[in-house]
Image (tube, rainbow, N blue to C red):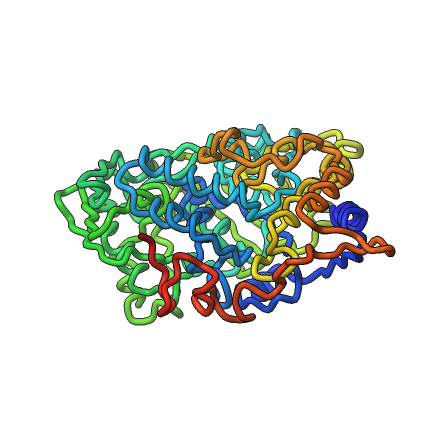
Length: 534
């Protein structure tokens, strides 16, 4: 996509555009410390199932997370009108109230072009139909957070299925310490089952929980457990549920995704029931916290030293999930074996072997040689190669919930000006990018609207509440130029873009600081530097 974006922007703007490849972690570090060494950053988001709830992808763009504070506002977007409903949705007392606030926030951000979607991300994988009978595809397909093909498929010979994995997926035997959400989501389903999980159709279903009830204006969640056992035969009890959440939430520095509510109480209320109580509404709790953590054995983890040394203890694999752990070589290999005890939801008839590959060429060679039954996380080029060269290989392509998007670094000129952002969003030839980068498998029509949510996402606002950058998937450079002219921009005799005569090109706040350092620019920041809404 990069050459097309470069050419389109250079034709639009009349100035040079440089693409600067950096590691993803470096790019994120540059943004969240507000280094301002680029005007745009190029992102997409992983298919972490917890993002089916809108909280993270709404809350992250609020003004109090912008600037050099280490928070994950990847555009350093600072808009008071957006921030008020974006923060309020997290304290809504019903899903109906919350949906209205989420739609309001994203409608404001869309009109403001807080982000510029470029092309839908797509999910790609493949399987060897001669070696396995595929199952569990659904909307999630085959990708790095989809566990169901590994559970629901069956080997045509033998009793094991082989799959590739990234070394990071296999890195930590205490996988609760994973900083990668997709790895945490998939290992949860395999090893320690959560109370609820997202199935292959993106639906939240009960697993170790039988059901739940949200009461008291979303300040209380009552959970009833199924009758289930750990892999050693011990029953899974409400005490195990209480211990799991309290252990994780009391060790935020150890577990990157711990994220406890500000104030909570967990009570065992019966032989098979447990209650979570909060001081403030937690309307996203069921959707984001119940699937997050697989339930562990209190007695097994306590005996292994989890309480004394949560960072360094060796986890005992007394599992609540459908598999037990066989061999695990950190970063390289993991074998899972089907449990003998009945699991309440998943009962696979086979084991699964994960082998670590860091290079696409290596995992493709293994798949084409028959050493892998399922291959996940492949490029469009690899999809084409499988289709052309490997008769037993069946490719699976599904739409992601997220686009690839440009994140304008909002404090800086010229991207701080809305008309500049609108012109950039209007100029891209998304059709050509689709052909070159996605081999025609994406739907560029979806990214004509300025929103981070694509159609598969259940919280995408209605299109009449979204700003449409253009109706032309091939781009409208002349229309974008006219937009700039109408806003007072122009070009000199060398065809270099010039600001309007009255443009204030000073940054919205000092580099490396936060919007609170410039309260005069933001109506919701008080003179003392606090974010406040009337």
